[in-house]
Structure formats: structure tokens, C-alpha cells
Image (cartoon, rainbow, N blue to C red):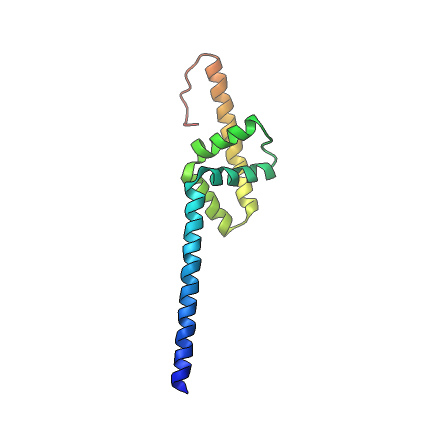
Length: 125
């Protein structure tokens, strides 16, 4: 009887190991998908900017894409996703809204300086 119980316990452990392995592989694949492909990153950022009423359609959407690719880049969006997983979407939305406002301010200053014929010598925008 104890031998049968040990075999049942061993089988249960194997099933749990297989289940955890499958879930870990799925999690790894989804994180790779979210960080490698730019459309997933852009959709993530645009979702929060829309929630905070920072973007509409048209040129703002293109500017949001540039914001994601050039300003936040891979590591910025990855960090925001980690913050979202460990806190809440409200925190991510507030952080993104602040970053977006800073980006737009710097972009407006750059456009103003370029329209006056001056070279922009500031931080990377």
C-alpha cells in the first residue's frame, strides 16, 4: 500500500513539473513577443495614453509611435510592463502621462528652435 502511495505522489509531482514547465515556457514566449515586436510595444503605450486622454488620432498617433520607438525604446517599455505587473495599471498610466508630457514639451522646443534656424543642442529627444 505504501508503495502505491509513493507512486501516486511521484506521478502527481511529475504532472506538476510538466504543468509548471509549460506555463514557464508560455510566460517566456509572451515576454519575448512583447519586447521584440514593435507593434506590441506601441499598442501597450498607446492604450495608456488613450486612457489618460493624451492622444487622439492622426498625427498624435504617429508621434506616440515615435515616442515609443525613439524615446522609451525596448528597455523603457519593458520597465513599464514590469511596473504594471508589480503594481497597477494606474501607476503605469501616470508614469506614461508624465513621460509623454515631457516628450511633447521637448519636441515642441525642438521644433521651435529648428523653425528659427537654430541647431538644437539639448538632450536627446
